[in-house]
Image (cartoon, rainbow, N blue to C red; front, side, top):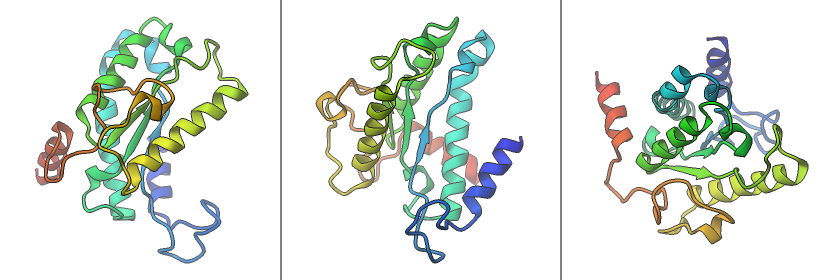
Length: 193
């Protein structure tokens, strides 16, 4: 679609000061991760809710490949960290919102380089209020920082996240060295085909 083409074009374009003030010269900056904040519209109809997991998996895989081609910051494309912002209380109240929310949680439980941000504790309204957006931004920044630094702990706790961690209990979202998760194996198989 046009959205995908525009996104790929943006990723392939050298990062510049429009993206960040420190990106003065080509090569000064690199794409280092993905934040995905979407899903509400998929909770309206059963067919889109049921296909959300597979579409999310393919999208993240494709985005990681594009980021890796443009800025090979990590050794492998699948190592690009992904933060998925979970659907809030209002979105979960949609006809199939809980199906999408569960698809997000299922995805996170199988991707060792993905982390989830809960939002159902922030607002029960259609849009987040200013305070909720500040908390949400802090959660995203904290999660990305933890995922992208060498100080990444073996276990991120609920206290670290200021709320529940989406995904398997006690799972840090970081793969053991040399270990591939289910999605990494599938991505490699797809790329070799």
